[in-house]
Image 1 (tube, rainbow, N blue to C red):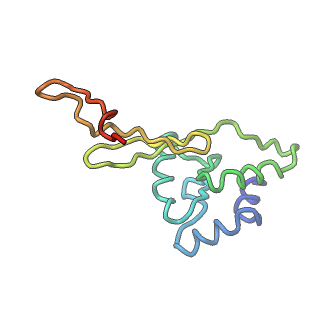
Image 2: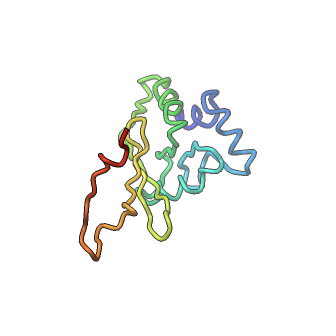
Length: 138
């Protein structure tokens, strides 16, 4: 109950909750799980989180932008309340390039996309390498 109140009424996430409310979205799902995302990320984040676990009141779904604020709320709760992070799962969406879905992995501060090469690997005449050393004579 203390965590729920802190998440849904505390000032740390007030801007996030207000943005969701303006878009007609709630920071609390019917299942009791809490969601802290930008409005345009809401449905996809909930979908991805639902693929990882059946969402319950103890679950908090947060995009990278709000993870630290959620962590701050959790850390601000007195230890006598026994509120702890038990597990954190990271969901990676996929981006479509043509007909191929490419998984997106956020690694440290980089976004890593594994895009297959568009270079044709074989040549009917056999592969050839030509030197460009003589191409720019001075």
